[in-house]
Image (cartoon, rainbow, N blue to C red; front, side, top):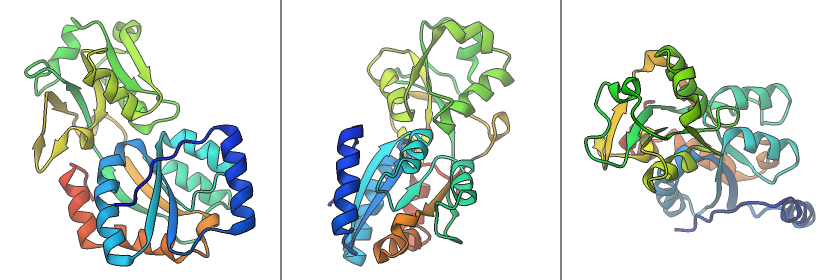
Length: 255
């Protein structure tokens, strides 16, 4: 599978943009900005996409808010798979996407998770007991799952009670890593990070009821840089197809 993860320093990003301006992106290759929660699903989808279409997918993973800034600064992404619907909508209003290309590819689910078996009960009472030292969340200013986590804490009346215990990851991947490495006893993660084939794959978790936070509608768009790239259009169409949808559902997303 030809999925490569790239992160860009300002200097490297400027050099890459300059190179692409001169050479152009090959039509059989698509550069995709992927919200961190969707890392595992897109890697699985990419394998089938490349076999079925012959196109190659080059992915970078991160927080939706950070990708917005990079896109506005000229990053060479052609497709954006966000963790919300508001950021793609904003890009649409600002004229940065191909008209008519925005659609919801998944609806995410938030979970409270611990790497320890039995630590998190299935009703989340562990939060109210407040006997933990550290609670991990993603940066709510950049990561929609982090924002949803703050909404849950507010709903439970726990915002002030746990604020000094919160450790904040730059994105949902880092929030997960704080818990998986034991730096936090528990944390709010994307269900997709701990879910496979209909069940929580490891540790213990409370799957947060949808009514406790705003819906996590995740939209995809073709950015202006991908307007003339057949691989960009092919990927967005593939995400709507049965193979991709089956993979997306297997990671606990709704459609």
